[in-house]
Length: 284
Image (cartoon, rainbow, N blue to C red; front, side, top):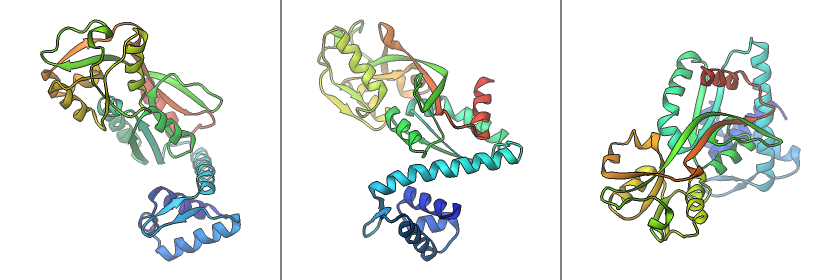
């Protein structure tokens, strides 16, 4: 087992395809297939479930992928340390969709201008999914609602989001949850922290919303709201950047639920130059 073999395994695991991995790694597919089979033989267990057009990680493969990512990350850190700790190489970040839409673009632009040797990768998703990807080593750091402090993870608060209720332009005033009890809601999946915030707002006032419609983007969500089909919860920073917000009425969320800190979260053992550079930009 060697570093090249681990890198091959991780790329196949993340693309689900030997041919895509071969294209990324500039190798022939047969070489990658052979090295993966050698790795499985050495470990004594299949790492992939082989389907007709795709490879899926087996249960053992998921476990080995987590360790392999950690090993490769440690090697990258070691190389960085021996080369003067200059930021370089792959740096995978994740963020909530609203944070990615408003806060992240200028930050990543500054990062790229200052550290052009870093290969930035970026993904969005709900907090729970991003944190799981961080724990599994698929992401190096994430921007989620925080703070987060565990045996494995640590964080710093970087932004404060003010959450607001969003309704159709001609909606009557909304002061409490009683004013909109039973109203349909538009939100992300159950793993979304903002959705849980919205449901908690109703629960604390002893009322329930109507049906919750799950959407994949704020644009779709707010289009339904502007048509008078229900309510949504969104950060004011996002609404300020959306031209469609002029077709909506925006109401403050009463109580302590209105303020949500967004934190940068990383694994405690991570001391990479890439992460240190990001924290430095945020401090500036």
